[in-house]
Image (cartoon, rainbow, N blue to C red; front, side, top):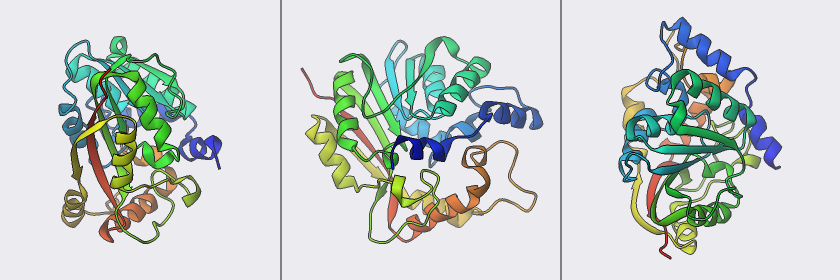
Length: 273
């Protein structure tokens, strides 16, 4: 199964209109902060984004690439908080369209652009970015070696890369659907050792690694896993996950509890000339 199966999992017709309607229902205007509950579509949400971005050594004018940008939340956050120039790329046309539309409403439009493309075949010149991130992207990419090599090529020497993925940490089957895959056919989980090896083969030096499963398990112990009796709030990741959102969340949470997978972050430095 290829590109169509992956993009088909994420497609949502009229996604940006649905998100803007949820904002109106909540009595909110579109902004980088008010969109955070829906457009930070990864474990840990905005708090995790902020933690990763802090490690990228960004400043106004930094050129940043967000691979697997989704509807643009991380890209908008980086541009708004660091004054960086951010390019987001995603395989799903509907996500790219929503990212552009939401940025027009929420800003900062002048600092962010979005392209439709494949993370394993990046259409950018060598050394054109100062930093990059790939957040919950690798789970849908079988050829992670091509992703790593492409990122090494488009980053300048010494540029920083933040990777944050669900990685395999034990034996056992992950139930499906999950937030990233309807079936196992489009889920390409790998263990942290494999990630490190692929990054190092591409020339990166991995300078930081952290397994966030303990924090996830603590959050699950402290908070309800299912939506409250009144239903989910108007704005949230369920708008991206669709009708089976609770089932998708439950499957990945169960896999974390059983030690089969874990959310793992890595920071790597691009090779020199």
